[in-house]
Image (cartoon, rainbow over the protein chains, first blue to last red):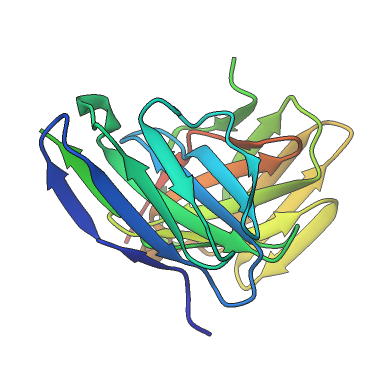
Length: 112
Length: 106
């Protein structure tokens, strides 16, 4: 079974630039999550999709972060404009509803 | 105060030792997850629990819903078990602990 695919694996940008991350969940998984993990901390949920609808985006900084899952399959997370404090690993995970989570390998973002 | 507290934060063990990592939470949950994160690597889900006990190989996870507490046990620990172990709970929201960094020395 193919896992959760994320790209790019690494990204380095300057502050105020824009960046986008892509995630392709496991086939058939209706629930998709984006997490932010700052070094030394546990992951923080940014947004949860159920198919193409948003279930929870309460911790998403909506002034600069946006995410979409237009066809209920793959998803993109965008930051515009990036700040230094956005440097983190961005993790995507998927699950069948209420079931075990499967994580991608993450995108490590460095904002200079 | 964090909704999910883990202990210890750091743990060093000799190969072969029995290891316990604890997780306490303060919110109502529908499930608790134990996750494993290797240095520089992604996260792997080890267990999802809503009651009782689960076992997979040398790993055992237990949960006490009344006490809002879960433990992850590793029997006959091995250096390849060295990783960060993260407890997460799902209820109205997802809450994560800050992780326990485990180092197993040969």
